[in-house]
Image 1: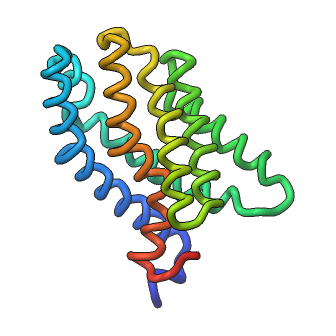
Image 2: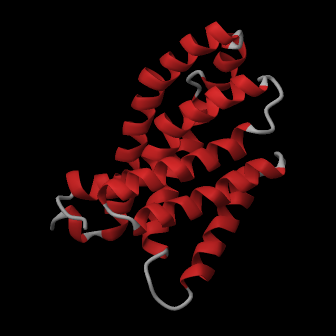
Length: 184
């Protein structure tokens, strides 16, 4: 039996592959670039405290990889599409925002909306949509952070957008194309 014919296994393996790709991209490239940039801006210690590798950061990253794949499945055209996406966004916000700020919950909702938008676009358009949506998601997650100045927040938003959120939003399409040899 081929793995491509087992939807649940394909979903989990796709999310794990996306997690691995984004984790490597962020902690090898993005974090290094960010720490160097933040040294120049005077916020390297705060950046390291917030974004250095910790096991506790892997679960939310896996949740976003899984959520990105689920959004593609739940958000397929049909009756009740937006209701299904709203429920998915609300559940994600409730599960992962917890007692944190309203901006953090908004980040999870924006992530689902961004994943739905990226799933609708094709090729280069999907990447552009993911970059724009990723900037909004990063803004929601970074806006309430008090350890960064406004300039440092802008740098963190740009770094998180390019190295984390945009790849997560457009990743399921790439995973389908490269790992499963299917897609649009």
